[in-house]
Image (tube, rainbow over all chains, first blue to last red; front, side, top):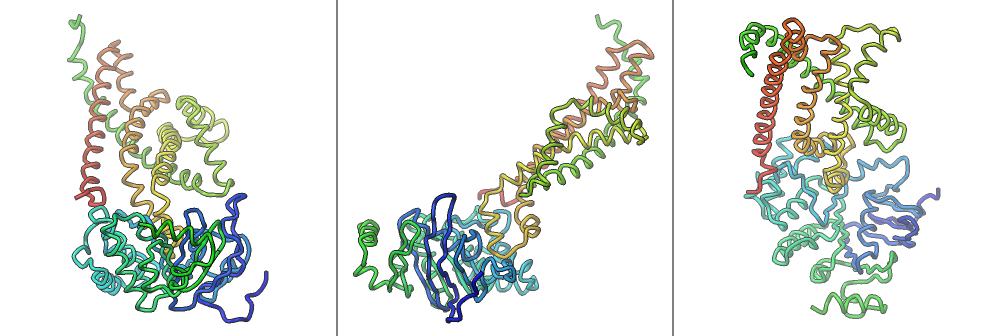
Length: 252
Length: 225
C-alpha cells in the first residue's frame, strides 16, 4: 500500500476514498481534510452518502480503496488499533442508541469505566458534571425510556464526551426529534463546538451550520460536489445541484 | 365405574411416587443446566461469521430437532456401550436431555441476541468496546430478559420429556407409575397419579415464570413511567 504522503495531515484525512455497496459506488473518490478544532457540516440529499462518509471515520463502515487517516493513523493498517482509535472518536446516532437497561449516568460512565479504565468514582463524578452540562442534572438516574427524544440525544452526546474524545461525529442528530426538541440538542452541539472540538456533522440544520461551521460540504450521489464556507455556500451555491438542494430545504 | 379405583393403593405407593417426583425434579434441573451450557455454546457458534463454527452448530441443531428424542435416548443408551462408553442409565438420561434440549435452547438464545437492535452493537463498537465487552455489558443483559419466558417454556417441555427416561429404567416419576401399573395391575391409578404430579410441576414452573416476569417487569428498563 502507499504510504501517507509527507504533506501535513489533518485530524481526519480522506484521500481518494471509494466505497461500494455491491455494485453501487456509495463514496466516489472522496478527498477531504478536516483540521483540528474545525467544524464541518455535511449536507446533501438522502442517499448521497453523507452518513456512510462519517461512518467510515470510526470504522462502522470499511472503505474499498484510497486512504483514510484519522488522528495520524491509517484505517485498515494492521498497526492501527481500531478499538483504541474509536475511544478518541465520539459518534452520535440519529436514533440515539442509548442502552435501555442503563440509567442516564450509567450510559455515560459505561465505556469510561470499562474501556478507558477510569476509576468508577471519578467516572461517575465526570458523568454527573457532563449530564449537568447538557442540562440533565435532574435526570441522572432516569432510564432512556423515561426521557424525551431531545433528552435522550443530549445523554448520547454526554456519553460521547465522557470518553474525552478528540473528534465528534454526528449522524443527523436532530432528524428523529420533534421540532420543539431540536434546539435543545443544537444548543449542546454549539457549546461543544465552541470548546474547540473537531466535529463533522451530517445535518440539514442550516442555522447550526451558519453559527458554528467553518465549512459546509455538499454531497450528491456519493461525491463531494461543493465545499465552502457557510456564507459562500448559502448565499452563492456554485452548482445546479446544490442550488436545487438549497431551494428545497430553505423553502419552508 | 369408579368403584374399582383404589385411592388406598395410591396412598400406599405415595412414598414411591414421592421418590420418583424428587428424582424427576433434580434430574430435570441438572439436565436443564446442562442444556443451558450446550445451548450457550451452540448459540455462540451459530452467531460467528465463520462457517467453520456455524456449519457444525447448524448441523447439530437440525439433527437433534429432526429426530425423535426416544431415538436419541436409545442411541445413547444402547449405542454408546457398543462404542466402548458404558455409563449409568441416570447419566445417559441426563446427557440425552441436555443434548436434546440444548439444541432448542440454542435457538432461543440466538433469537434473543438477534432481537437486540443493531444500533446497540454499533453504540458499543463506536465507544471502543471489544466484542466480549459488548456482549457482556450491552447485548446479553438485554437478551437475557427476552429469553427468560421461552426458556421457562423449554424447561416445562424438558420436565415432560424426562418421562422417557422411564424406558431406560431410571426410577423417576413415570417409572413409579409403571411400577404401580405392573405390580398391582392398576394402570389407571398409576398414570393418573403421575399426571397429577406433572401438573403440579407445571404449575410450579409457571409460577416461576410469572414471578420472573414480574421481577423483570420491575426492572426499570422495561417500565415506561
